[in-house]
Image 1 (cartoon, rainbow, N blue to C red):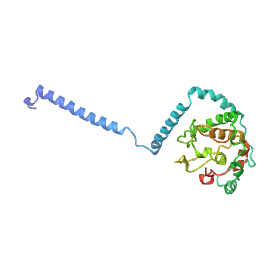
Image 2: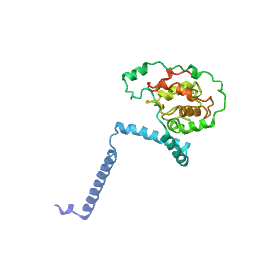
Image 3: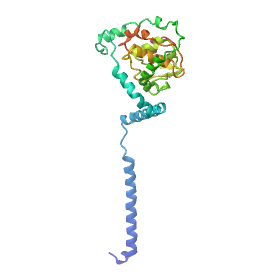
Image 4: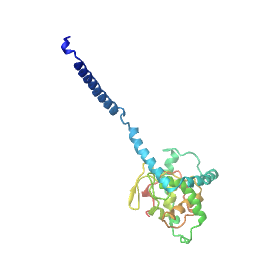
Length: 252
């Protein structure tokens, strides 16, 4: 090698050029690594975003409605009620399998006559029994998971506060309780539709169902007549039928 081309200055310059080139490549590789560490989003990842958002919304709503101390205070009472609950006797206790002969027979059966249930009662303006309201309040802890503890509605259920369906014909509420509800429903001018709809809640006793329906009809700013256990019993034959649709209900 020509001694004139191998001087300390040339070596010093070559060293820094080499070091600079190395740093440039290191930065490029670092950027490539950062932009490619996140894997491709799967369908589960996309769905999870909405699921966690809904979970957080429900969590915040529950925190705003009830404090931790209030929840812990009612757990023993709810536990005792659940432990003391008894199954409701039915004429046909066999499991109703979808599309089975029993399910088809029930689906084709006409809706029970509701005229007597919805007829104006002589004691419609009578004061609501506080004991019935207490029964309903305890039962509503389950309902509030979807409808909101203050009846404001939520991601899984329409509002009960100011709902014409709540203060309307009593038979509507009992039928929804016995059969559940599927399809869109308009409440106070706004349409709500939930993929799975409402599941039947017929496992409660006649007194418990009458209590919770009386409670929602006279809470959250609502005011309407009480629901009686005998009115609930009159529609027990609806249990096992497919989820009811709004078109099958009496217009409020």
